[in-house]
Structures are given as C-alpha cells and as structure tokens.
Image 1: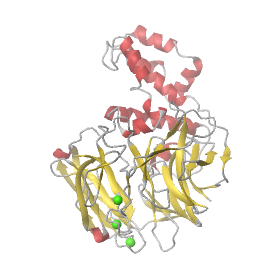
Image 2: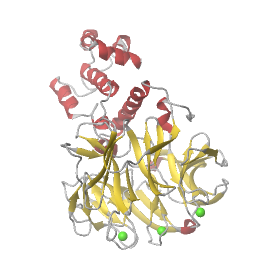
Image 3: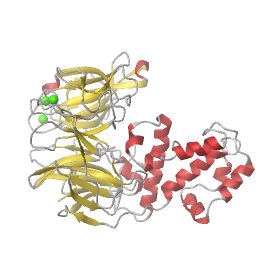
Image 4: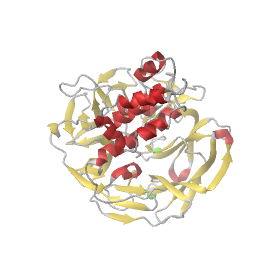
Length: 484
Ligand SMILES: [Ca+2]
Ligand SMILES: [Ca+2]
Ligand SMILES: [Ca+2]
C-alpha cells in the first residue's frame, strides 16, 4: 500500500501531477463504463477524453472506432507528432511522453485513438485558469490548513469523519499503512493498531454511546466468490478503538458503506452495506444498535454515493435506488426503499425520462421532508415540486460536482450557520469545464448566500463538527482545510 507523506507540498508541479493522476482515474473509469456516475457528474475532467462525443465523431469520420481501426503507420504517427506545438511537446515530455513513446503505438493502435490519447493528456496537462481568489458573497469562512500533502499523495488521503473521543469535535481518521487520528487543530496521533488483517473503512457508533466504533474489512475472511464477480469477498467487522473485534456483519460492502442514515428513525445512525448476496444479486443490508440487522433490500444502489434521506418526512431515512430487476442504474426506475416501505415511487423522479440521477438528499428546511438534489435543482419528493438553485452572478451554467478525491465525501454538505441550515457544494462554472475552485452555499429558498473562489482546486467537501458548531472540511490538491 502507498505510504502517506505528511510534508509540505512542493510548488508548481502539483497541479500538473494532479491532473495526470485524474487522467489515470479517467482512463480506468472509461474502461469500466462510460455511463458511470463519476463520468456523469464530475464535469469535463472525467466526461471528456476517450468517450467524448467529439472524440467519437472524430474517430467515426476517420472510419474507425477507438482501438478498432487499422493500426497506425509510422507516417501517421510522425504526422500526429509533427502537428503538436513545441509547448505541447514540452508538457508531454514532463510526464515522460516523447516521440519514441508515441512510436511505440505504430502497428498497435489506430491513428485516431493515438491522437485522442495525446489530446486528452494535453487537456489535463495544460494549466488551468482559476477564478480570481476571494469571497464574493457572504461573510468569509476562513480556512485553517490541518494537513499538507505533497504531489500524488493527495490521492491517498482518505479522511473518515468520526467522533473518536469524549469531546464533541470531529476527528478525522486517516487510514493508510497505519491508522492515524487527525484532530481539527492539525495535531496527529496514532490509532492503537488493529490486527494487520483489517482495513478500516468507516466509523459508526454501534452502541449509541456517542463515540464511534470502527468498521473494517476482515481480509482473513476472504473466500472465492465467482458469483459476485469478484475474486474474493470479505466480511465486515466492527472493532472498538483498541482494535478488538466486537461483532461481524453479514452483508458485503463491495458497492459501498454508509454510516449516516437513520433507517429505523431512532435518532441514531445505522450502517448500510451495499454489496451482493450469495447469488450475486445486488443487495443492501442495514444494521442498527449492537449490529442487529434491521432491513434487507434486493436492489442495486443507484450510485456509489448511496443517496439517502427522509424524503417523505416520516422520521425514517429512505434509500434511493433501482430495484433488483432494473439492470441499468439510469433506467429511471429510481424509487425509495426503506423499512416497511420497499419500492415507493417518487413524484417527479420515478419513471421520468428527463430526470437527472439523484445525487444527494438535503434536509435544509426546518420542517418537512428532505429534498433530493438532482442536477442543480432540489426536488420535494412529497409534492413533486422542484426548486432551482440560484447560479452565481454572470454564470450561464453550473455543475454541482461530486468529489473527485478518493475520499468519502461527496462534494456536498448540509451545515448550520448563523441559525440557518445551508447546502454547501463544490461548484463548477459551465457545463464543459472542470475547474473546481469554487464553493457555493444556498438557503432553503434556493438563494445563493455564499460564494468563494478558493484559489486552488477542490477535490472534496464534507461537513464536520468544529469548535463552534458545524464546519466544512475541504480536500484540495495541497491537503485538508477546515472552515473556522
Ligand atoms: Ca460507541
Ligand atoms: Ca437508527
Ligand atoms: Ca422516511
């Protein structure tokens, strides 16, 4: 596993390496499937590249689909390389791509695909023009840097927001080779090391004493499981802070773990494991106090973020998903699932072919149900009414993006500030852009009440409990910062 380096970050090369890293993620994502959640929601950085319409048109005009055409000749590769500007060649050289590297594709791949690869590399490598930094609307939050990272180490910071001790402030659990606890003041201590066969994946207060226990994958439990499409599945165990095993949970977590849904409405968060049953069918299981199984649903989660919230106002959270018969998560069969209410249609969403996939549930009003964030609108699932979130002045289009980091946040949070509940999100100007340097906040009327251009790109954003109430945690290319 990668070793994390807690050192001061080193200057200008960082942004370039970040986008190169994103490119690798992009290449992986496009291999897996061009309609996955990340691609739809993360903007240009992930939606362009091998699968972009322009790229495909280009490929079709030349009579070949990517990777499917006649292998390129030396003359074709020479021409591609000759067409590059000297600046572009220098950018490529920085990441080890030179003429001889391109020559390696002669006879291997068609010219259109090689051209697209170079183009998408360059797209990532060219410097981003960020907005002029500053707070444009609302009283400045102010940011305290609590962790600085160097280079590609940003991709390995995986902060799990938890409460691991007696004080009410959040701690961040950083799990790499060794688990470390990062306090919001920036101090770090080591977690008492659980057995080496465990990988901590989440924190959850199983016994309702206000202090989280730890969820971990038990690698010693691995078993061949061809039906699930994976080589191995691992059981999920609950550990105390001393690393001792308290119990194990039956469900698998291959498709995600959620620890902030209250499925039974008892006021405490339950844990949801989204994975597969023995027959390979997508399944979600919910566990409450003491690890007792509360609910089991055969469904495919609609997205990797496991969208959930009390959308009907009955005090119990629903999970938004597609029934197990819905093979395509975007088949617009999104329904609400939950305790005693499996597969309930959502007005304005279920069966609506024009509806955006749900990305987050927002409990922003003092009363009533949580709204569902779809695109840049909030859907009231009871009335079917949609509320459009206001755009920053002068912006023609806006995307609310899920986090690009490998962290557990989603690029959204609901926080209380000056007695008002607000939706906070990482936002991107335009539909074809990916510069993620902006934070916006909206009130329950959909009015934009805060706008800040951070001066660097934001990978992820989530809520934490700070010294004086709710705060925002952001993950940028240089590390972690907390609002003051
Ligand atoms: Ca506890
Ligand atoms: Ca509960
Ligand atoms: Ca409910």
